[in-house]
Image 1 (tube, rainbow, N blue to C red):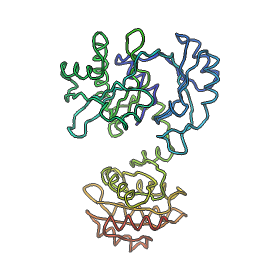
Image 2: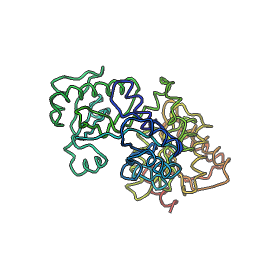
Image 3: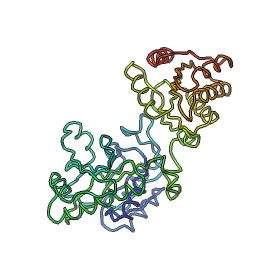
Length: 387
């Protein structure tokens, strides 16, 4: 689950990370009123969507007066904001965050992630933070430094000093930066986060740091341990279909292609996506059926693909194992096609636990589909049928 900026900042502030003072607003009048009670004489008005890239897309503006804050909010609230991370349809801005603008002396990038190679937590940092950071990394990949963190969240003081030296942070600010890093790691571990990003971490003209923008992503599989997140607005909103899929034990992200993909397991889903792309096709979704999903829940997930007019064919790629035998998916496919008035070509590649039984089940129930015994054939067939 991705948190809105204002929600992420609220959490960071609870752990001692300095953030600008701000308030959420859902109307232009509210935004103007909120600006009037903020300290300072310059304000930032920020569209609250769950995708990044807002700054370059016009979703973040500075205002010199409260009335200007109201004007910017009027333009943003209700509009659809398109960023490189939203897709072509963009996201509707339901609210803006109004905060005191920060005078920047220097901007940095700071993030906490799981280092996939070592399986440990790692802090990433760069002295090149700001709205164009991702583009700069593409041009200059060597500008990102890393600091290893142990499993309990501790890190070596000397290593941290070296890490900050590489970012150009020394002297008194280095002590504050070290405290901020420690706080970010603590948030990361205690919230079961998969990503915490502060960009920019600004060194203000008075020599102190401030997290001007922040992003936190929480591991969906750990949400049951965090009932406190159930009340967050980001947990109650989002793409309607994706939210329904979550309720049905299916991880689903809509993409802009025309091949509906039904897969069990995130790794298999990614591999299938790569094969479709390499073969010249485009997936309409990323689907990962969780091992606990029932055939009824999977049927509802396939039904979502059938209801999407952009989906021209469906590729069912299942490797049955443990709690997800192939016949569970076959039963779900039969149910989904029976429930839906819309028919599209269905290509199946079933392997593993109960694969033979599942193939026979599809035949016995007269489920229209094309059977393929290799994934490469299945991908090519699905692409051809979607053309």
